[in-house]
Length: 79
Image 1 (cartoon, rainbow, N blue to C red):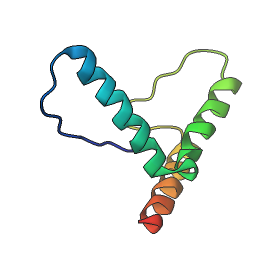
Image 2 (cartoon, helix red, strand yellow):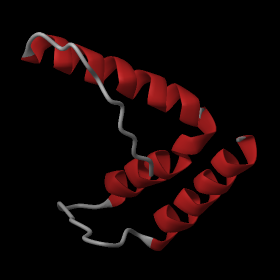
Image 3 (cartoon, one colour):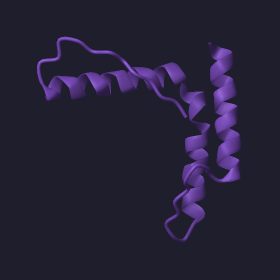
């Protein structure tokens, strides 16, 4: 999981603000790298095997949490 903030100045309207936010989101994902997305793939595979909708609050399936920890370690080692 990741989060970021980017300050913007001289934004003339909401369209420009949204465009800049989308651009920054793309850069943020690129900085994390493809290896930092394994937890997302595991969660998608987990979802396919479920027969009904599930919602996890403050925790995720154990395998997803383990892969998120691996993703975080890979990201920290790349910095």
